[in-house]
Amino acid sequence: AGPLTWLEPAVDTDVADSLSTQFLDRFGDLPDGVWAAPGRVNLVGEHTDYNGGYALPLALPHRTYAAVRRRDDGLLRVASLQAPHGWEGPVTTVRQGSPDGWAAYVAGVASVLAERAGAAEVGMDVLVDGHVPLGAGLSSSAALSCSAGLALRDLVPQLDGLSEAELVGVCVRAENEVAGAATGGMDQTVSLRAVDEHLLLLDARDRSVVPVAWTLPDHELLVVDTRVHHALGDGQYERRRRTCEEAAAALGVGSLRELDPEVLDRDWERPAGPARVLHGIPDALPRVRHVLTENERVLDLVAALREQDVARVGSLMTASHASLRDDYEVSCPELDLTVEAALGAGAPGARMTGGGFGGSAVVLVARTEVEQVAESVAQAFAREGLDAPAFLHAVPGPPAHRVR
Ligand code: ADP
Ligand code: MG
Image 1: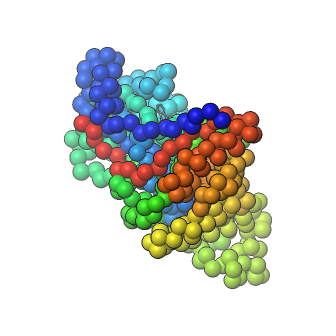
Image 2: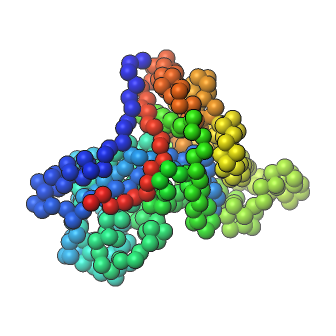
Image 3: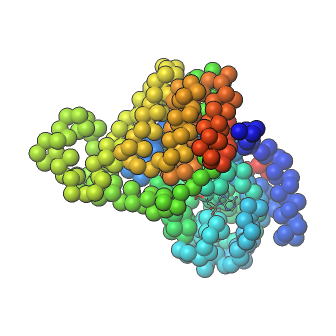
């Protein structure tokens, strides 16, 4: 394998300078300001948010930047340095599928906020520069919608006082209703509500967040972007979601979170027990088992962090991967290979992160061994004839903020 590819975060003020200049070239005026919103990596708690459960993500120092100038004529003009085509149209024409493509994330947020403000004249010119790798399972999509959402919140007087927590709901709605992306809310929550230098324990049932300190000073989190995306995964997120909803309904609960995890070892197989009830729903049994065990792993991992128990943090991560691979069936050969290679090189724990079927893995690794573990993963990819993966240092950063 050749030299390793590291994706470094940008410096806020550098991006703001260059984006402002390019904004001027494109739109003929300087922006009112520049806003940044981070991507995220989830340490544990995957496919739990839409089941009312727990997750433990952190905001990456890799952010998406939006230079924005408010307009009061209801027109949206959006462009991105990462996309060849922009979009232009009145905010009142925005709906599911219009615009289609990437601009839906920005136009969708503007449309939901215009409705919220009760003002059809809400509009803006936006130029985006994304430093979160796109489609890598690190939530460039939420970084995009949250950067635009925060900008409008700060610029439109009628939106004064809208909290970050409320903005999460706005961005989720925009993605669901305009971009047509089913999203459980973890990504937007951490992008808008992260606490610098902390993980965020998220409870999707009441949308509460608790900052969790990183207590392992000799270890860091290494993200491996496999740079693959399997088309096979398209539609699988919705399928998993539907199976969980059907299972919850069959079990008579509003969400799987309401099930006592002890049913797994106590009465699982008893007559009329959960296993029997779920028998008629294809794959429901292993899917429910993943969700219940994953919720427990989140709380166990938080406890292990508090006790500075490196080995336990690692083994919970690896157990999460096995559950996603075997019970939830959302992993893929490249993610399994990454986990295997990282563990083989001595990492205490590793797992896929994000929705699956490609994207990224997160590895717990001793600071002194980061390069060596990354090298081992890159070599494993080369041996299998795969394109080289990219690497990121997942140092927990601040939430979405105004840069200037
Ligand atoms: P992830 O959120 O894990 O990166 P998604 O498929 O959910 O993957 O979101 C990726 C999509 O978000 C892209 O295909 C594009 O539509 C949009 N997107 C994200 N960042 C940008 C950007 N900087 N410029 C244009 N589109 C972007
Ligand atoms: Mg996304």
